[in-house]
Image (cartoon, rainbow over all chains, first blue to last red; front, side, top):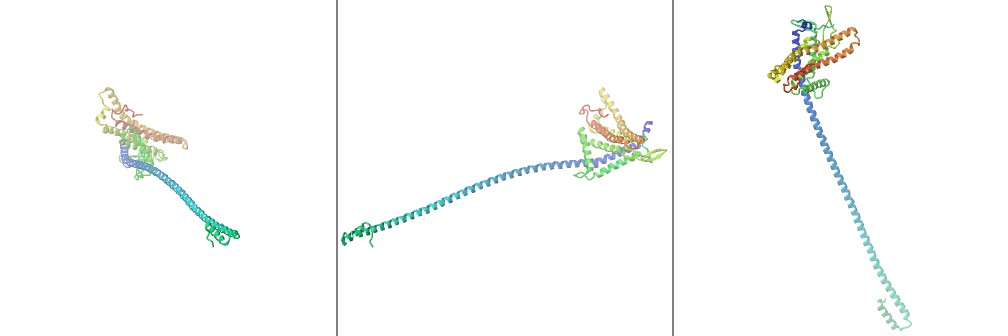
Length: 168
Length: 247
């Protein structure tokens, strides 16, 4: 037992150390390990939840973006359609207007033509009348010396009748 | 030159207050302060909480790697042994430990000395470790299975069992003396070097002691943890893993 004494083994101290360590163990277990494990678990859960919700958010964002793209495309299509419609409508209107004007012009032309015709007929008529009068006058002047007055009258009357001229 | 045994500073009745016992109290205070500052854990950890969480989680993972089934039971012992031994090993390296003291009969009696450089501490821890290991074995695998580890009708297994039984007591000695020897030798080494030339020369040795302090704490706690893992595993489950207790 000399060696034990040399090393300084003292049962009281030894037991004191054991008890000291047991107390420490208890304290550490209760106030350090347990709460830390709980906190770690809690944080793990929180992170998992956070990641999950982030994933969900990403997914919904993607969906929204896709929706947006779709809507934009649709709007674009619609706009194009409207533009096309408007263009065709404008074309139609232009065409209609052209046609209208054409018709009007034609009508006007036709009117003018008919007016012209009428006038020329009148003119011809007048010309004929004038020439007939002229003829009758020429006849009167030329037959003056040849025929008697009676014959003269008769002849002129006949010619006038033929030429449908109402004398005087 | 440091003495083998811890020096008594005060004598209170039957209890001698030694310098290593004072260091034990300092380490206790440090640990309790640590526990106290861990009392308000926050979701966003501060520096200290981060270190504590890192250490606890790391040690727990190590335990689960070795024994997934009984990790919850073994871990507190593993971690507590480590923390206590580690802090007391490193506390001995603080300037003033082993150097500040008073003279008694012409010899320097330091006020403080690393708790683990006292055989009482290491022996106490080793005895506790071994007894708790055995108790845990009985509680986990049952008395019959536990006894069958040491006693068998098969002569070869009986021989192995006797060796195992002796191993219980040798492991007390090996655990306690390994730790005590390493830390005490470190102190002697440092005081010798310092007495040769006190400036710069002790630095490499001091660094060595820093490593030794960490490694020895890890060795003691790991051996305890592995012994507990082995003893809580029934015979038929442990495939030739016995006897791996000693290094």
